[in-house]
Length: 100
Length: 497
Image 1 (cartoon, each protein chain N blue to C red):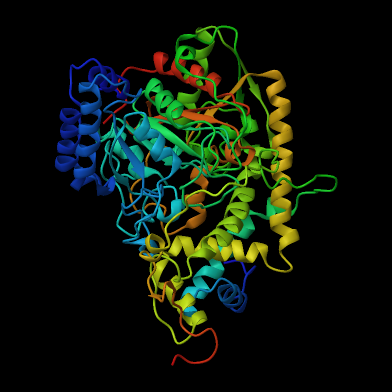
Image 2 (cartoon, rainbow over the protein chains, first blue to last red):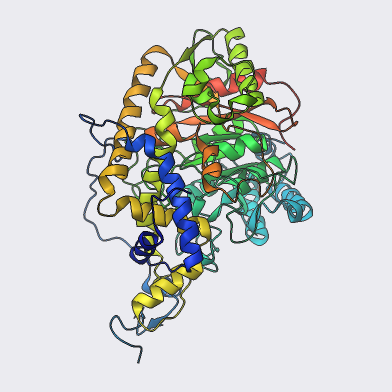
């Protein structure tokens, strides 16, 4: 098992990604991600001086359309798919502190 | 019967669309318990679609080129009012308020949607074993995987449950299952087919494409879905060329390059037969029987008048690593939307942040979590330059190398997948081993170029082998033409199960 990623680092990344794992799961993930990064050592080792990055395969240009009023999705139809709704809006638990 | 055969029979009044739909639904009812190709069979909707086609014909109205053709949709394509799950608990029960553009186009062409097919959760995987609803099995041997991530669509066509199917291809998710299931699968040029209503995995690589039992069927499926859509601003602003008559053009005078690096043996070179020492610098683990079929295919093209040579794309060996860094990074960002607020699963928590964590932890499967973790890591402070930023430069390198090769040859040939279909469970314990399935298909996604997999003979185990034809951007007509020549030359043991 290579140690490119430690359990603590995996736990930190999990917090960033809003995921929760047990310690055993973190150890397994750390080992699996380390193996993938070991494989990526070929990319890591590449001399990229003078090479521009490509984030997209086609040259992208701005696409515009006429600014016309057109029908869009109905609010009721969209809200019908939400797990929790109140007063015509998405309902979420409190952003800060404890639930009421 | 082929999809084009169905369409011709329905248009000529020899069959009703309803009787065709009933035949396919009966086959699904009898056989899909064993295969598991479908997440959802749309019996009522399919019969209603079929009746609409028959009614239009009865009134003497024109019907589309796919009139009455039963089509299966990968379950990451939105269908208005019809559950669309991505084979994830996260979206179980969700009914999209709109349909994907490709779905609207198929319906406009007269197609009959018979169901939504199984996939690796959120299209992440190469075996369809990462589905929250259980695996799909290969119709040629039910102890084997169908490939993935569009394994349900490939298996549906191979088993005769649908005459055509759509999948999505981010790193080979159409072509690899097509190869393993013995059908034709094609990934169009990035920007050729609207992604509106395709649930995003890695937005700079995702592309929708067709599966067919024949090259002509796949071409008809492609023609039905390609082209402009104001709802996808990444589309290429140039009308697609029709494919039809190119299929009979032959390959006389065409220059075909066999990509040395994608025919390599690497770690498993002990298994290879008949390759030279250059294999060591190629991608890992292409099996000897697969290489032999690619060689057979190259010889067949030569006999048909093509000029075949070996070419080199050195950066192709970097593709796998670059691909997993880029797609995981994009996925970690795309899948941030599953926060339990607007649709899908919500698992309660004391506050919003806890609800987000509870929802995501319960809703995503192991492989999706792994990719989100890898992508989050690759984009996080301190690692961005070491991995993600370099992976983007591999993409630049690869585009330049392919452009140079296409100065000398018209199309490229290589295996689609390194092996034939493997046993269920054989690669689930080792994510990296599973990722290696995609070594030959990934380059076309990183470059955005089109590619097609065509069945060409069998492996030592009697299972189908697919060979891949790749071409430069917007060369769909050319790669379909070469694929059709290969189909004519392929050993005639039948490609469907």
